[in-house]
Image 1: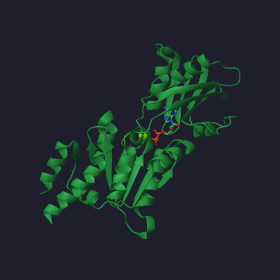
Image 2: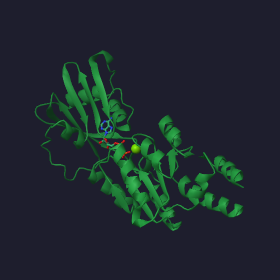
Image 3: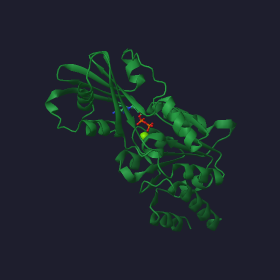
Image 4: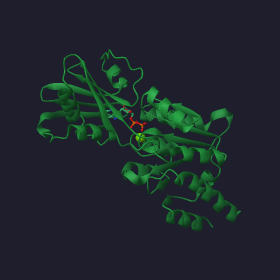
Length: 286
Ligand code: ADP
Ligand code: MG
């Protein structure tokens, strides 16, 4: 019965928090994925440092690393790793992280911003920059309200992502959607490469929730939705989906708390496997 189903799933590294989620998964209509850390590895590497307005590459990287020092975002970790030197905490004051946007801090006597275009806009800083043809995630830096350039970081699509999405479609899932806080160009590249039906970019955590609510009622009917995420900037949408699935490989407590199903390792292939198992379990009971 259900307990057999849940037990069988847990032996395969899929933890289900209640029998009702097996029902939902068996009748899933829309699968919604987070991008960074879920469809991609979330392991970033700094690939270019582009200062403007007279700043040097070293200065740009140093200020960015200090501003990002207290953040656990994969983007921050990559910048700190590229800097590679010890960070003197006493030089950092007034640190603030803005979910889905970036960070702010006073480093020595300078006010530093590091984040995306939304962050620059909200602080009324002009990035006089041609963004065309840049592949990767851009972290803009401002120093004392002046645009100072950007750091380009590259992420990799997970090797099993395309296959996972194809399998979900073969299982009759009506729609596969991607929600991301990242820029449109980056999102478009990933969506195209993976055969994702729809994507929405530049979303804040609360806008991901709004999008998911829309998808629940897409096409005038009530659709069963699953959201698959890593818990970084997506715990609210994990909680809002009919079934929230956390990729537990990174061990984010927020994700494990907010989710209904936890995938114990970072294997996307467990998602179609969970759908198949849910259908099988339901058939035995009925
Ligand atoms: P996703 O929705 O793809 O998982 P996030 O919501 O975690 O991505 O982040 C969205 C965007 O916000 C990032 O692509 C980046 O532009 C910006 N951002 C978030 N946190 C940081 C940070 N600590 N430093 C710089 N930029 C950040
Ligand atoms: Mg993420």
